[in-house]
Image (cartoon, rainbow, N blue to C red):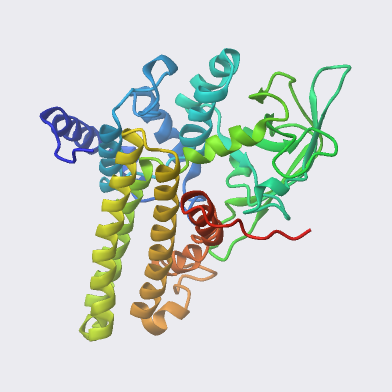
Length: 401
């Protein structure tokens, strides 16, 4: 990838920057910086309205092909958009799972009827989505899924029974894409199907999980005779593993580069706090902060390189390896930032803010939520196994009976 911006790219960056500056004003100005991991409870309805405002002006699904309602931006222009969005401190989106994961999956694997039914609703942010992958005994080991679905021959519908857990934003979502076992007696990645399931029905119970950060963006979801239409299976029944893995391939796309801009802003706030309370004068603290700044620059450069591999068509072993390395790098870096933030805060980091109740400041919330960075979205152990087995060709890890 040529990282030198063309005149068209520079003009596009200015277009995005100007639009955000013009529109993040008035009623929208108060939304700056709200939402995101550990803070999804913040101003959800207002952020939903903002996202619909973006949609009205053509700023959702910017990387989707134009025939599916997207903007059809080049890979580099998508990077520009997400970077400028983060630099503007614009509020976090409310439908990442629909726009960044399910939408591209339907474009790649869905029927024309499924695309016509769901893609316009995602682009317009009229329907929100959750991801039904993890279970109590099938987190990183997704092939151990036990949620089951069977066909009701009288209606043709799928009937689903089972439990999902750590289901982000299910309590705020309209639909959930669910990996379920549809072939009796099947094991591991065989006999799974990728189903689209409405959440507003009697057979679905969503229980929010209260987190240490004070929010409840994760949920348990129980399916007890839940139903979905017979044609709402993506790909062939029993062949859902390939669809599920295809979706994960979209998970670490260009929006992650905007994420690094947000990380840089968080690091700057820690540096500002260190200057304010004098801890910057400690050579150990100063060295740690300087090292984190340089490491973040390296992570961003690596992310750009991994996207260049995808653009160059090298998105098999090399591309997958790059994605796993990037996940390992940013997750551990961000967790370390939370630890540095607490060291900079000192004794103040041990106390909730003096406003009554359990009121955390930004650095306390950063520390607590970033403990999960190395687990969600594919744990460190899983990423290392991917690199060892699929990229380096080492023997597979022994599995228990």
